Length: 118
Image 1 (cartoon, rainbow, N blue to C red):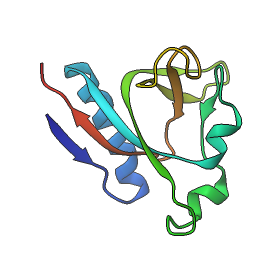
Image 2 (cartoon, rainbow, N blue to C red):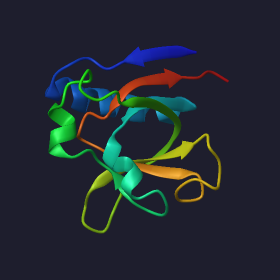
Image 3 (spheres, rainbow, N blue to C red):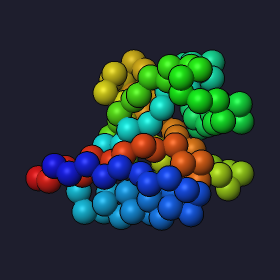
Image 4 (cartoon, rainbow, N blue to C red):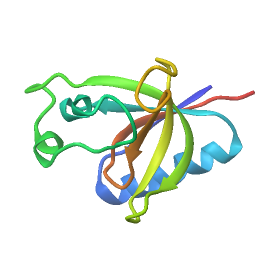
């Protein structure tokens, strides 16, 4: 098992997202991300999770964001052309969309990736 942490900076975030998608082609990958307050507004069904602009700039000490880890399943694109990754949440099938959560791409939301070896 190896843990890969994201570097700071917008360009590096794009490279990092491509890197973790590449890791997924090699084997199982779990990703860590912040659980922003607006994520709880729609607890059930399909909804691409994306923080509000205020949540993106608010320092962590102002609001204690919980960290979350989920298994990376695949990259998807919705009907409007928005890319997102589909994650399987460890809480099981009774959570959100039968245990799956959709996390927006290109917003630098993943903090780390755990590369698992079989």
